[in-house]
Length: 133
Image (cartoon, rainbow, N blue to C red; front, side):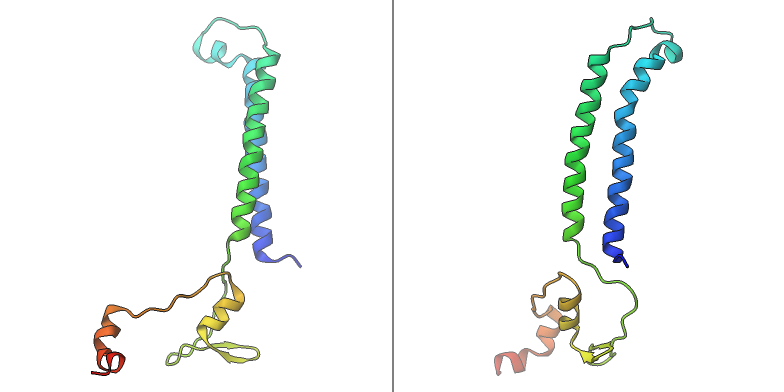
């Protein structure tokens, strides 16, 4: 079974691909239908195949660059989903193997990393024990 993350990546890439293919067809549609002539009454213009090929190629090259960048960025995203059972006191997470520290669980199930510090409120509350006053 495909993981949710891989499924999301494939769907985003698919939608972007469809969008860029549609964009690459617009110059051809414009040349064949001569849209400015019909919509705005401009003089008819001859079909310019070289221009269509260049414009479509440019859109496809940009599209490929965007698709590669999107795939790279989406592959780097780590996330958690679902409902986590967490202890209201010690903040441990219940897993099928027992209870684990919150940081341990997140570290094992995502790409997030922790950097511990002390917030201003806790610093005031625990100042005496931190600085042995």
